[in-house]
Amino acid sequence: MSAAQDETVAVEVRRGDPTPEELAALVAVVTEAYEREAETAVVDETRRPSAWSRSQRALRTPLRRDIGWSPWA
Picture 1 (cartoon, rainbow, N blue to C red):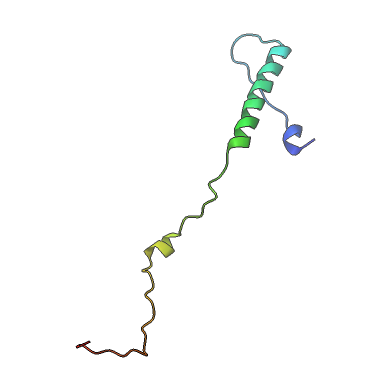
Picture 2 (tube, rainbow, N blue to C red; picture 1 turned 180 degrees about the vertical axis):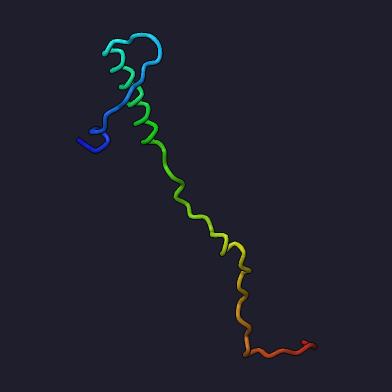
């Protein structure tokens, strides 16, 4: 048994007088719905850029020192 199966469930009946079978059916339906939802719930695995990286300017390519510079070129 897993840890989740070891846990007891507390059910509070506020109206009516359900039989133990009715309560068991209710717990089974709710448990099945919860397990189905838990299986399909996934976290988005794509990493988004941090606020730090979004705020930084893109780095420019280094200057080519081998070509030189002339305003009349």
